[in-house]
Length: 397
Length: 213
Image (cartoon, rainbow over all chains, first blue to last red; front, side, top):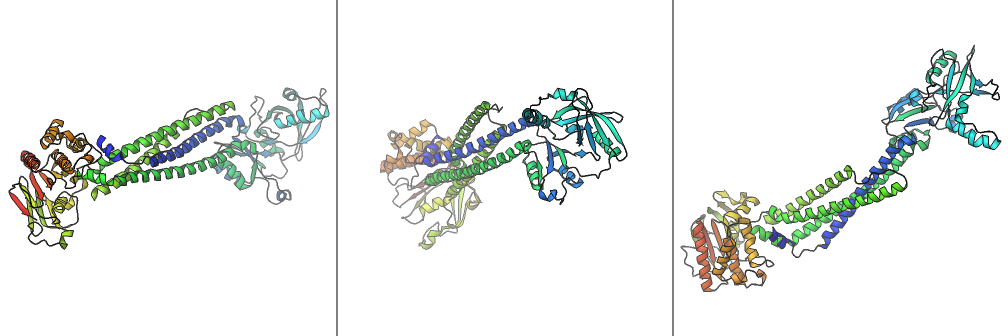
């Protein structure tokens, strides 16, 4: 083997091999750190989805002139709700139900100034509601109705209206102490219930009452025309799934975009990654070409020597071995360097992320290792076959 | 091992007058193991072509060559490689040494894949042929005669049933070629091998089978 190296490595230009190594290295670093970056970002998105609470997505139809004028329905039909439910990203779907009779609320209290207002109620099944309270719930025969208001309403009053009008700010607890009367007006009857605000929802922008109550009340008092649900609430298995936002956009629906930030971020990420993979693929493809051509050049430069070795009884596999060993060493160097530099890049990223208070795993993921070794093996295999074929051809003639 | 040539003729020889040739004109010609053949002819009569065909280097011929009843055209690279390592040794007219390697490394290049001779035996042979002091030199700077002797030693560093010696004494002086011939003969004897020696026709070696080509 020592002699074979001496014979076949002599007079070879090494420059093109170095370029082949640099090219492959560049492609690999780009590809591997790209994959690592994507995985890290994905992890962040997944980890933060609880914070953002985006797995509950409320979908409504866009309000436009056509709908204002009564062309087209602004509600969701049964079929449309079914379609949403059938999407791969949706786990559970429920339409909002609303009151089909007039409601009013008023106070008669010595401590508080009296007020009177017309009102609407909506309801969704309990599992979609973020306020957990023992007071929530309703059974037939109860004359107490718990109500949930959006947190935004309270904020609007406390930080907008109250301050500008010189009124006192009201803490949540105080509001919960206020009891008021709720009047339900059926066609022939009026029934009064006690109502109390028991919590504020960050998730649903509506005046909520228990689902059981509203379905019961609609049955008993309802006489207005039944309208289609104007909003639908959906639970998604993976709110980072870019298909959600795609679906909503394709259908001309609307949602609170903030909630789908991670989904949109994911689209951008996927786009960037696929671009990166494309570039890396081209670079690695070119590097493979340079590798093959370099080795072919080395072999054809040594063609006389290879023929001579064949005359001495060397089999073409024995003659190919030095080339394959060189190839192996070069690719091993490429693998090592690209893994090390990708790890350094990923480490830098982790460091930066920690300054932004983001939790990033340091080190490379298993996917990165798998891709690296898979690709290197492929490069090794293709080049080895090409080496064997060309030495075999030389030895045959 | 037996070589049997059935109406064998290299394609270039078709354009040359071959009358009187006991090989190219024969319907069948046999080289048998253990025998010594002197193939004598002037240049261009196809001596090297014959050896090249029998060594599997050339395929441009008409007719059939049988090696132990196997048509040589059916042999694969692996078979030829094994024949060249174990059964046929060839002292090439063009020597086929690697100029960049030392004379010793050139010999070892062969001996490494056969493991046939010890370093001591190699030195001994080199001493006999008077090239032991050149073994460490690059073969490229040696004279043709010296390199011829290195090539002879290299060819003896393997087991063989046939030895092809293609004008291997052309640049060696009379006494040295006598010694070389004795060395070759004794190696052939030891291995009960056949010898095919080619010469331009002025050979002084006394071999039993003289073949004119």
